[in-house]
Length: 266
Image (tube, rainbow, N blue to C red):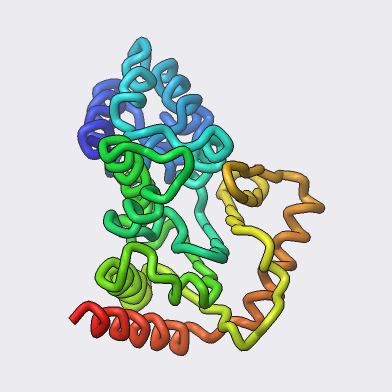
């Protein structure tokens, strides 16, 4: 669906004789974001889609198509962050308990969603999992955004979904690292306390706007754009990263733990 949406956008742009940069200027977007949408790697936000409709004089076609292309909507507390995530040129994630959404496999996502409250039916879970997998389309680009994932060791050890699901999920992460698409750093239990023990954190950088931070808890989340506060979050991330294992050691732990889970399922 994302590819068809992007191809239609490209066709309309070319029909009007516009370059990606000219369309970006008219719609108040970046050229790279237009390119990602046309390639089917990302979705525009609702506001972006409306501006694209105005710039291309396409009525409300681009904005009206959006609801049909997404699965179950994300929580209202995450919607603004989800839209910014699709525009970021750099993402730095910290996960305390489970793998960040954009890096989850379908089986792992279903296992996480299965234990939520209020509980979801099977159809709703499948739709929500599809929504998470659509977010991961941004990884189809070989370089942008740059993604760093710092994981507490608990993320690797907690058997979400059982041994087979964990083996698949950790192998997926390790494969992304080995193909140099993401960086993963594990904060081992031996470190003890570290600055990010209280929350999950996402830091986002952009080509054309200041960085932001998103902090999430149970059924809650908040987007922060105060420069002073974002700098404090970045500082806490950097301190925790200093205690994390180097990339190669983290990769070795991912592979070894995946192998352990694989043996449990024999």
